[in-house]
Amino acid sequence: MGDDNGTFDKLKGKAKEAVGKATGNDRMTGEGKTDQAKGKAKDMVESAKDTLAGAKDSLTGDKKPE
Image 1 (cartoon, helix red, strand yellow):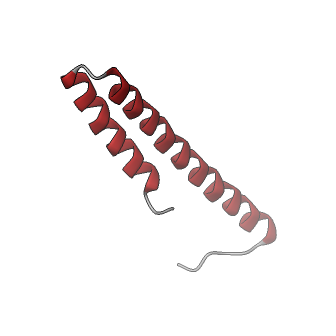
Image 2: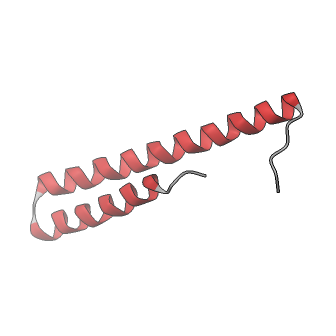
Image 3: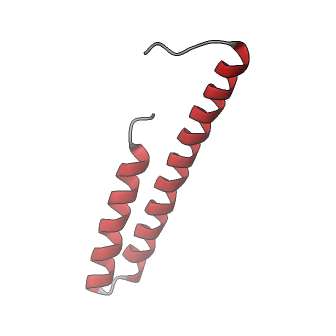
């Protein structure tokens, strides 16, 4: 997989959202939710890349080294 940027964004977003809720800062809460969505999107892109690479390899007969 990728370099875990999606995971970092999701964790950062959760922290921002929690701090925003605890302090009543709606802007920070919103930023946290946005960061989480960005992290999920990055994870989905990486997953799609892996799926496409696997499909290409199965069609061309290429195998990844174990």
